Image 1 (cartoon, one colour):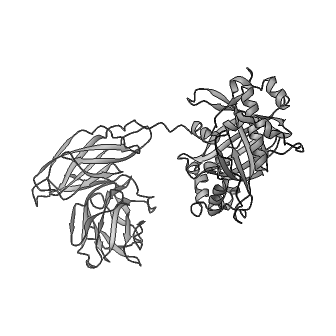
Image 2 (cartoon, helix red, strand yellow):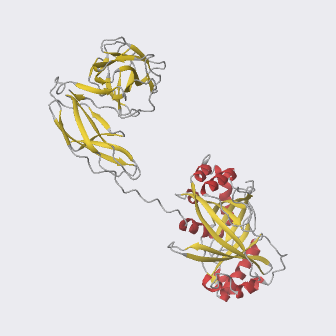
Image 3 (cartoon, one colour):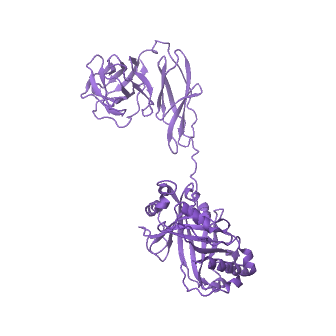
Amino acid sequence: MYSNRLTPKNRIWKAALAGSLAAAMLAGPLLAPKSAYAANGTPNYEVKLNLDPAVVLDSSHNLVSAVRTQFSTGTSTKNFKVQYMDTNTQSLQSQGWSERIRKRSDQSTHEIQYKKRYTIANGDIHAALTQAASEGLDSGATGFDFQVDWGYSKQTLSVDYEKDITISGSSGSGLNMPSEATSRTVSVSNEPAKFANWTSTGWGTTQLNNSVVYGPVDFKRYEGTFDSLDLDIEVWTVLNAARTGTEYWVEASFKTDSFSEASSERAALINLLSTKGWLVPEDVLRTSLIIERYAPAPPTPDTTAPSAPANLTVSAVSSSQVNLSWNASTDNVGVTGYNVYRDGSLVGSTSSTAWSNTGLNPSTGYDYVVIATDAAHNESAASSTVHVTTPAAGSGGTGTLYYKVDGSTGAYFEAELFTSKTGSFIDAACAACSNGHDMETPNGSGDSSSNLIAYNITVTNGGSFYIHLLSSGADTSSDSLNVAIDSGTDKQVTTTSNGNWAWKKPSSSISIPAGTHTLYIKVREDGTKVDKIYLSKSSMSPIGLGETALTPSYQ
């Protein structure tokens, strides 16, 4: 970052210049590194002191002539833009790491840096170096440099990995910075292994893949001298603490490889800046403040509730089961599901606009409402309340339940909404299924066509139909079912295996004339499962869970 642009001269007189004032301003003991362990890194020293922008900057935010003359900076500057990468929760900062991408206007490449910081307590540099070495950042850490950042009252050990990179679309002269997505990509592709695997394998990579940009921030650098040392003065333009405007930070800094020189020259510079009235006697935690002030604004919370479900209908299909259906709700982001309440208590949830409530008591009245929800857990107003009374046991309701099938459009049925059944089929919960339920025949329950579920249908526009079943088999090899219309010939449907769901159909179509009929699904091999049924004149199987199923009605 900095280089010694002049050959250092003898500085014995600096000790006298430091004087009693500078000695009083040194905030802590000055302890040079002890003889380091063999694995410890060897640092250089960068002294960083803050200047009062109200005093040292003119109305155009340039250094006033007195400062430029004192340090022989001239009026020209080098211009920079920098942005930091971290997660929304600042997980890099929490581990003492920072990662930045920086561009200088007169250079075609960007500089990328990964830095780990260690607090130096009571001036004990050796202890900080030893801690870094114990965490793998030692003299053998390839590509890492060690530096003691020495401010007005604090010392910090910085261990950084830095390189110049070419970023497609952002290279060349000027201050072009990469987008957030590109910044993630180049940060991951250039990360050193020590950073990538800091707390666990791939830790750094994971953080960077989920990182956001903090910044960018502009600063300009004046280059001058102090006591034959190269001295830089940087003027940073940053958001103020209230994030309502900008403020300016001014920092003077120099580098040296010698602890003793850093100590004496720091005292001399403090003495000079204090005498001139330019010194700010405190440290600025620059990276932390930028991360704090440039943190992305949190997303605006979604507080809009979905519309209430409309046109709720509830039909008693047996003495122990009712079927519900309703019109879909709308939402500014998207409806994620519906909660079904019976007599004021939550009894079920579904992502579809139909639901079946089983296990009810005969000859009993129930009140139902449905409430829509979204991803932000906003709840709609309740639908209108619908009252239903289940028929007496064995009565099967009023009349006979039928599905109305139009052969010109086809029809879907939920398997669990059968009109009758015998044998081993059971209604089971199924998270992957279209209505949260399916009909299953447990393994070992028997391979018998007397184990069946039936669906009464009234057909218009009859003809040749394919019977598609969204089905599954529990065994490692496929299972199978038979389908039939009325007393016609059984047609085999072979399921998938290992619990996988897929639409399957017989090898040929079945004639279903207009009129009333019964569709049978019979067990051929136990262990089979059926989620949904599709009657269609097309041989093409549906996609996914298919379309909304019909609800049977009495006739």
